Image 1 (cartoon, rainbow, N blue to C red):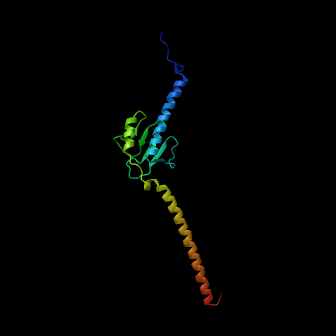
Image 2: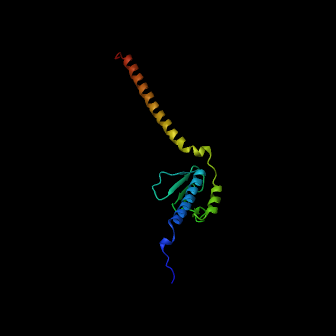
Image 3: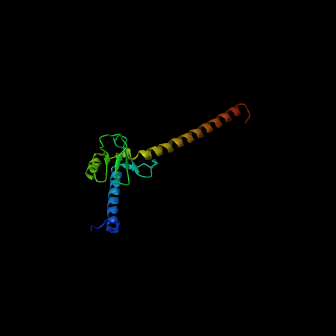
Length: 150
């Protein structure tokens, strides 16, 4: 009589090892993409996957999604599938990584520059308001003195 397959035929240690291996591969992919210049896009509403944006807007595949299964997918409409990698497509994924140009200093500092420009513009606005108020006060005092009011 043939022995029936049961879920208990696999030990928990085997399952833990397979899960740990897949998790290590997925985090390795995520780490590789971060090292290649991608950053986590926190504006994405999806909590099922990581959305990654490359700091260079010139890159063809500058927006990627990495799913919990390890699949990496570009949002660029591409029928060739050149940026759709399952966890088993490690060689193809590595070739893709080598094609990604390293971000320049200008690309990496974009977020900092935009934030800094905002603060500079805010300071210039309030400085301009202060100058206009001071100028208006001076003009009113001058007019008041010329008419003998002050």
